[in-house]
Each structure stands twice: as C-alpha cells, then as structure tokens.
Amino acid sequence: MRRVRIRAGQVEAIAELNDSRTAQAIWKVLPISASVKTWGDEIYFAIPVVLPQEDSQATVTLGDLGYWPPGNAFCIFFGPTPTSQEDEIRPASPVNILGRVMGDARAFRKVRDGAPVSVERADSA
Image (cartoon, helix red, strand yellow):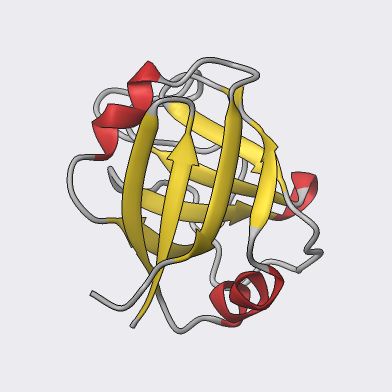
C-alpha cells in the first residue's frame, strides 16, 4: 500500500492510496505543494494531473481522498459540503476515489482557506 503524508496548515495526516489509475497518476507526480481552498467540510487544491472520471462517486465517506476532474483537484472530505443532504458527504460533482485518511480526518476542520498544503510520499510504516 502506498502511503502519503498530507500537511495542511497545522494539520498533518497519513493517508493510504488505493490501486486506481487515478492514485497511480498522482503518486507519480509527488510531491505536490499548493494552497488550500475550502468548501464546507472539504479542502481541495489544484494538482498537475489531468485525468478523466474513473468509477466516479457522487457521495463519499468521511476521510475519503478524491480527485475532482473538472478542477484537476485533490480533495479531502471530512464532513458535509454545501450540496450535502442530511448526513451525506457530497462533492460538487462526482470524484474519483483515490484513497483515504488514516485516523480522524475531521482534524482538517482546523485548516483555513489559503493555507499551504503539501502531499508527499511517506516512509513505509
């Protein structure tokens, strides 16, 4: 399993990538640095990868990592977004699931719009 370290503002987390083509493409371009954008309980940021939809999902689970094709963006989901209904977590439009945060992804609620973010390969643990 490929693990990445995500640092956003004062928050740091380890995540595991799945075996999708999307995850493989992102793994190849690491490390990535950007500025966070927030959208409800989601942070996202543009990355240098352009990919089509791959088994895209309209709703996701707490802690999922996604790739949003319309914005070429890496997304971290940790709660409801402006389009969520009831208890679901709904991206702006379907995303490719590429992995998930290990531990409590709700820590990302501390991250503010414009904060620096980096994603890098983590040492094997």
